[in-house]
Image (cartoon, one colour):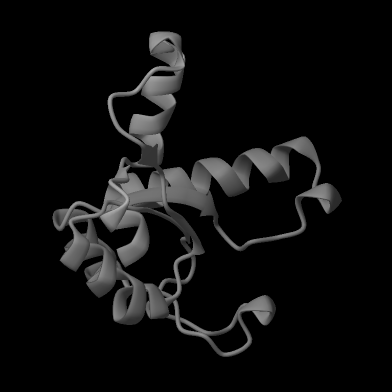
Length: 131
């Protein structure tokens, strides 16, 4: 991260990157930009990644699994703690973009359309309600 910072890279959130791409600007940017993302919303982001990003003035987007926040009961998490709603709120207040991942991180290829919609909409609604 420090090397990217020294090279002049700035960061934008994923939503800002999407807006920039939609507006195109002929692909020209006055400086190198990047979007940094993290999946699943593990507490290790808050403990390890966020302090580095904050110290460099870098933004990031964290895509979180919304149920249950702070728990370890999803099998793929292998005992890793999720960020709690309080932690997510503090990160958001610090400029971290919180994005919807899914509710339970299922294998979406095994769900019907209604199940897929429920996973994404449920995740989005929980974040809008809590953060």
